[in-house]
Length: 323
Picture 1: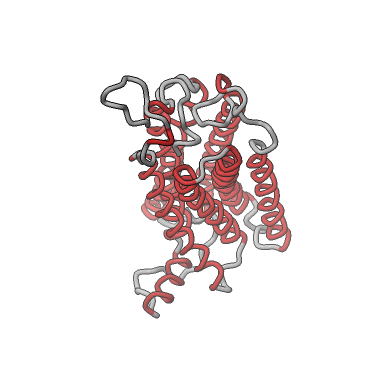
Picture 2: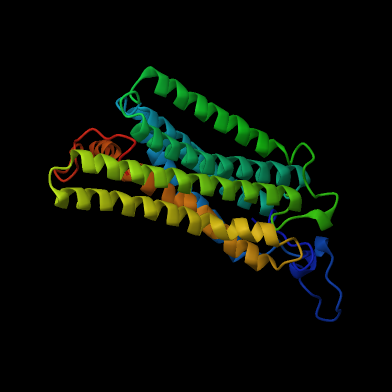
């Protein structure tokens, strides 16, 4: 993301120009070869390719399997679409940065990335809300009302994220005032701080919801468990899974969120790349956590690949409360 992550103070255009041996001044742009490719941008492009492949598989499975239409699969599909767009955005950004580097392209690329990653984070929050409601309102969860609520929630998520993605094109950028740039050019420092604080709020809300899920799960386990040994194993496994989900989410996004708050365009760009790359890896991990762990999706994947289902895959109906 060299165009969006360019540090205008310590990473200016002189860094990329070849130097004339007999003259200390930079060679004119028209006389130099194409710009050298940053290895960080290559890493982001490779990550984007992996993200796109993984989430394309998830979308294909959900689309061609009529039985996977429950609310939780709608949310998983929405998350996969968001991550797919994020992966394509990283690839497109790499191509356009080194082939068609204009202001309009810069704004379109960063807008796509903002919309896609915002949708990814909000869909994860929506999945958390769905898991909570499936336990809190277990008797009324499998109703038409839940399906309607899910679709409304998905539509609202995408409307908000599309609006966020359009902000750079509508003038909320620092192309005319480089001093106001954040660590991700052309996003302004103020906008980056708002997005980072919003992420911290979402993470805090997810923690609170997962704590409530754990409390409800323990209470249900105490009510239905016949043997204490069974209750300890099943409930502990669920809590461990929830902890892994939260820790993975935090490790991926927290460094970039905190860095966006404290840093600006004067900081070395190497720090920006080092925090952005783990954030993009979140979209690599999401299909594994929310899709490929699901027995129903595993069953459909095995049927599509080899026409059979391994005996170790549970055929028990899966609910969104299963973690």
